[in-house]
Amino acid sequence: MESLEEIEAALEDDPVDIETFKEGAVLLTQDGDWQAVEAYYIRQLRRINDLDEDEIKFHLWYQLGQIYEFRLDALEKAEQAYQVALATEPDNHEVEQRLIHVQNQLD
Image (cartoon, rainbow, N blue to C red; front, side):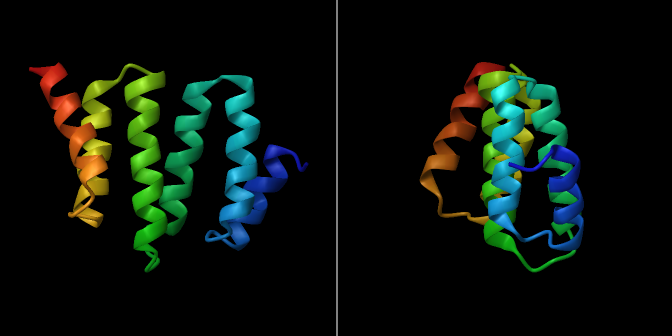
């Protein structure tokens, strides 16, 4: 397994290499540092922001929403992440249900 620095460098060269991204996510989640996981996801979203990779963006936003909801107890951020994911895949009922659940908790 590569170091996180090597993984980040590889993602800079090839931001759509999902397997490399997953490797970094596994490293960080094993440490249980959810703020670091959040930052890792945000860096990856920035890397692919200008690319036509809606499926990857959807999964990153949805997973980021779950990190906010279940690991960081940041419901406002979870709501925002789920809204972006849902805008990418408007017919995704799973994301829609997560969004409704979070919004109900915020009310």
